[in-house]
Amino acid sequence: MGPNRPNRIYPSQSDPIKIHRAAVIQLGFIGLLGTGVVLLGQLTVQRYGHELTVLPHEHITAPKPPPARLLPLPKTQVHADAPPLTKSPQTKTINFLKGAVKLDPLDHPIIGDPNAKEVIAFIVDYTSPQCLAVARHLEAKQSRTTPPFAIMIVYAPTESVCNKYIPDEQGHQSRNGCGYAALALAVWHSSPDQFLEFHKWLLETGQGLSPQLAEQRAIEHIQTDRLAAAIKAPWVRNRLIKDIDIFGVTIKINPQSRAPMLLVDQQLQIPTAPDRKN
Image 1 (cartoon, rainbow, N blue to C red):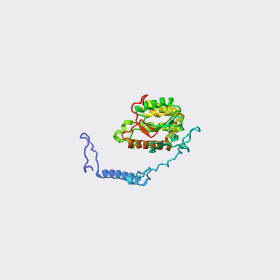
Image 2: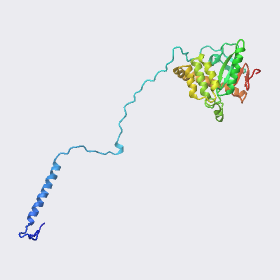
Image 3: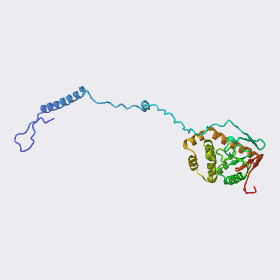
Image 4: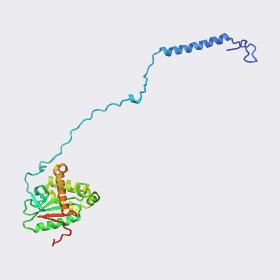
């Protein structure tokens, strides 16, 4: 606080500077008084700004998203000249295998006149190269027969995806056979006049064919919207299921039955190497 007696700041000075204790106390009091004035101002002046309150997680709620806007689904466009997606009311039942198989030529893809006197049921798997050989043999024989017989196409793909009579371990033998059969049925259902060309192409290229290429080829025969409408029609699925059930009947007759097969009158024929004599 300062000495009681004056101190000499520099030894050479003749008149020492005197510092009194009372002066030091007064100076400290003035400093404390200024500090008090500052604190008093902080307490009395209004504060500006916003306080940030941190809430626990259970009190935080995410804003609700706006309600979803439901858009109407586009309607499938079907050309005016497209055939109706319903079965014809006319029926013509043909009995095969002593009535164990009853088929309607008007409800199957058919090559030739459905009202022909003789009709052969050709059980097909597009992934079987033997089916191509049998098809060529039937086509040649059909052209030499007077009056020509009709060939009714029945599908039996050797693929467990759609054929419940094929074990899973054997289902890979006919890869994509179910899809090819469905495409062929859709083409027939939508544009019967385009079926024969697509049918022959599948027989020639079905083994090792990609589903994308098969679909693209089908679109070349009928427009995309017509193909989509035909595939979604119940007739295609139901026809394939019924055809596979026909294959199930042939399994009971011959457990080794596989496409190609022929239903001729009351006989089940499993051709292996068709030639002129057979």
